[in-house]
Image (tube, rainbow, N blue to C red):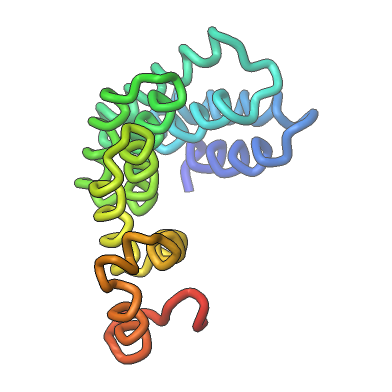
Length: 177
């Protein structure tokens, strides 16, 4: 394991600890980024956006820069994270573009995020279709949302899914594990 990977892993652990460990987490993740470690870009951005106690406009700008670089380098999870960040910032159209790209890339977190954004934009039919597709692929949270949705009842999905989860291929429904 090279130095950048070690710095990334240790920085990731410390970032989750918070408190006094965040200074070292920031230094280790920054060192991993400087060494060209792609996933460290996304992790440092997440840290700056959601965990750093001294977060401000400058750290937010730095996080966006890191995510842009990670997207350009095709780092897994970068499009999804940039989409979510832009959504949080109110840039719904740009966020949708990144989240759609993340879904197309196969990011497992992106369908739920895109569905939430589409729901906020008032496109419940498209949001429900995404959730249904994710649920069919075994996404437990998507499954629970779809099964509780009145749209499932109206479309006849509830009865179909109950029979599929008992007899069909693939993993058991989350509540049957």
